[in-house]
Length: 190
Ligand SMILES: [Zn+2]
Image (cartoon, rainbow, N blue to C red; front, side, top):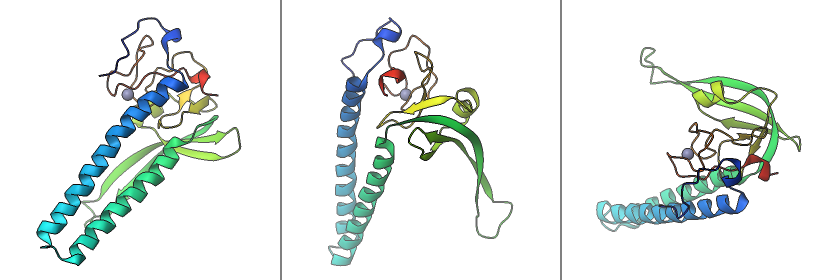
């Protein structure tokens, strides 16, 4: 549990960059342990199932390295901080083709906002259906805080949305009740 007590005061108790960094460091520690455990498990499985053969160990090694690279690539995207304007909202259909069977074809939706950042870059962020419909508005300015996936509105004092998991929050919440992420004050992340 976080040492931070649940504050009832509004705007003043919202988190700044230092509090968010603390939260991210705590979470990164858990992520590193998780990775170590997965890597050890993969190696043990390879040793047992492959009866100690070098090929099996090499396969486990490749899997672990690939996993590490994918994680690092995702982290680099997540670590970016930027401010910009929502230029477009999009619901994108993704069709999963299951062999030749048309009936078994699964359709999934990606809920995206397209943002033009103040430095002129284009960003495409997956935000979830309810956030896309109820939270983001075209033309509105948002800030994406490094380490947290959900861009937040720059206009309001309390963002009303968790920057980490996308849960809608009451405007007196200082931490998310689902993922325990502190609620940042968006205006302090310029
Ligand atoms: Zn959350």
